Length: 335
Image 1 (cartoon, rainbow, N blue to C red):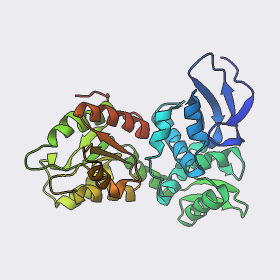
Image 2 (cartoon, rainbow, N blue to C red):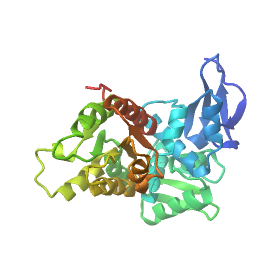
Image 3 (tube, rainbow, N blue to C red):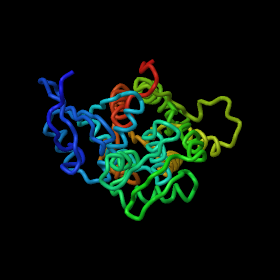
Image 4 (tube, rainbow, N blue to C red):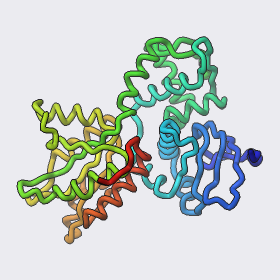
């Protein structure tokens, strides 16, 4: 095995965090090993554009990118590749809720402790402390990780002690292990909820059948559309809420009908955002620029996929899903 180059800084988080650079050998990516602040190993596409996209972003954006890296490794990709498309996809990724970040910190502690009788020891500027920052989507150890540790101790998710300077020594409690087991039901989901408009003339059915559904399947996930569920005997609102909660992400198409916007699509996208479930926005292009601007008014702060043909929708959506979510557990077939 080739010995890594001398220590250099983490390309995401800067000179305060160490990493080993693996020899490039004329490859198309820089490989960084053992960056605890990024949660482990990663690769960055060698292009000025890709590197600039990362270096110029703020700390919360870098924290979301680090979350993506941690999640890709959990799916089995030991050295995830950051491309320009991945970097742009992070713009659409919502920040995690405080509850999710605390659960991820518990998972981090469980991962750091190999045996049930061992205790993890972490603090500010320690390697395990940097790993805790990475796993919990945090940007400041004292203001964020410390608070999560303190709250977890008070809620009996951890057994141990926490000093005023942020040094923690302890392990997961039995209650903390149960909490992780319950939470992981959502993260294992391969379902993608589809929120979109259908009129009585079924003009949008082909957009779903030839664009959205095959794109989701090609990315390795399974689409779910509420009106396709013939078993649905519950109130529609209750069913929508339950299925969004079960989904890994949501695709929302904001194409207007003849009488304007569909409020239900905005409702479903907003509900998913409230749960920190990623939402991917799509919309059919309109020939009238003013109408197009009005179309995305309420969601204009998020990047939309504006499509003209169903094949274009399929291709762009598949690429966006893989950039934001990574490849899913399915076979990745488009039919």
